[in-house]
Image (cartoon, rainbow, N blue to C red; front, side):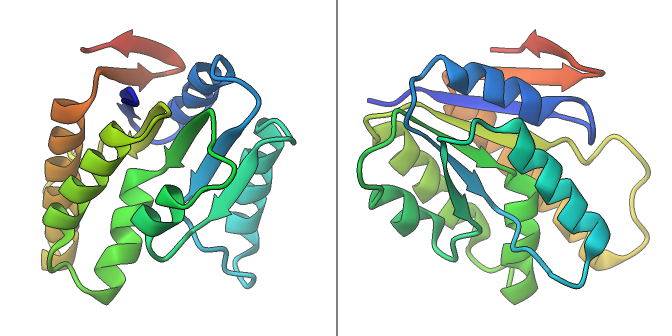
Length: 172
C-alpha cells in the first residue's frame, strides 16, 4: 500500500519545495496534481504557476486541476512512482465555489484511495487558523473546513511535517 505524507505550514513557508524533495526519491514517474485551475486573466497567479512548474523536473507528469481528483488519480497510466497533490486548501476553495456539502466525506474517501494506491502520495496544505477569526461567515466556514481537512489528513498520514521559514519539522 502507498505511504501517505502530509506537509503543512503557513503560506510561502517552503512546503511545496519540501514536498518536491520527498518525491524526488520516488523515481522518474512522479505525477504532480495541481489543484488550481489557471485563470488566463490573472497575470500574477499565472506567474506563480509558472514558478511552480519551473521548480518541478520537466519529465514529471502534471494533472492540472482535475474536476474529480479521485477518478483522475485512480486512472493514471502508466502508474506513477509517486503523487504530489498541491494544495489541499486550494482544492477546498475550488470545491466550496460549487458547494461545501459533502466535502469532509469526499476528502475521507480520497484519503482512503491514496492509502490504498500502490504509490506514495504527499499532500501539501496551508495552515489557515493562525490569525484572527474572520468577520465573514464564508471565510469562517473555509477556515473551519480547512482545519478539519488538515486534521483528517494528519490523522491518516504515515508522516506529517510542518514547514516554517523553509525548515521542515517532523510532527508524526
